[in-house]
Length: 311
Ligand SMILES: C[S@@+](CC[C@H](N)C(=O)[O-])C[C@H]1O[C@@H](n2cnc3c(N)ncnc32)[C@H](O)[C@@H]1O
Image 1 (tube, rainbow, N blue to C red):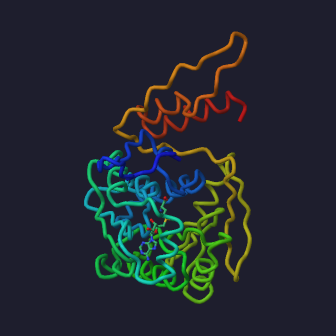
Image 2 (tube, helix red, strand yellow):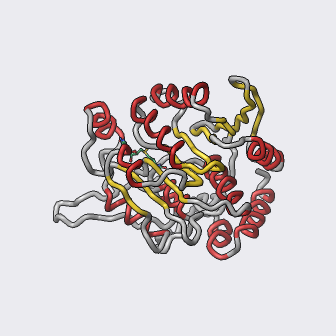
Image 3 (cartoon, rainbow, N blue to C red):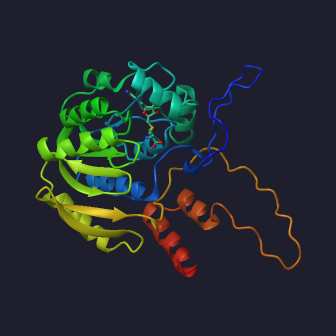
């Protein structure tokens, strides 16, 4: 995560917009295991020619939106909804915003997004309750719900996701089991036990589900997970249905979206003779591979390098 304050306004009044050189530089909460799962679900939809729009409710500075936008195909629309620096509607949501997202601005989101993509998504600035009027029912193949953590909002966001998703669509619910978000947990499990949502898998932070037929998705996911040495998984039964639990502590990042900004030059490390060089924050092969090679070669090159390091 970057340590600078995105969108901050210095004393001379000019806004310092972020210029991330990589997704790592975009502040947010989107971990390696979830990046791998987004990649798996969105690539599977492409392979099966499952068309549809993408929706993210709760974008913050764009970390997961930038990643998701890489999977947009011609003729599809990506809609992002966030309050950004606008007002919340109720005091509880306002307190949530002031506590967790005080440095957020729409301009910083847009600067981050345009560092990786030629065009912005369709941006809806305001409460997530505006989404049903702006995104058509049965139009989406992938919806990421990651906005307010309050039960009433999340319950409504899940209902929106159900309405806009196509039968083969996938919904992702963030923070469904975080200690500070009991309202998300309540809304998520209510959708499962009495709202027809089938859980496909869970990670430490996100729940992946569908209101369509889960059988083929579960089978494909289980087969893929058996090939991954960096993701632990186990199967359990919850409320009479199978559920795959995934631990991604050793997860290796999938190919990353490429920024148009060059990485800042690194200062040459000052070394005392006989001491080891400081570790690099971005392995050069990973950056080269992610920038230049097709994804399947990138994955192979990065895995080979990691195997060489004994990880
Ligand atoms: C956890 S952050 C999103 C993180 C982002 N998806 C990422 O990967 O970095 C939650 C976002 O939801 C937005 N938000 C909070 N309440 C909202 C509401 N009622 N309607 C729309 N957006 C809301 C906040 O402004 C914040 O940017």
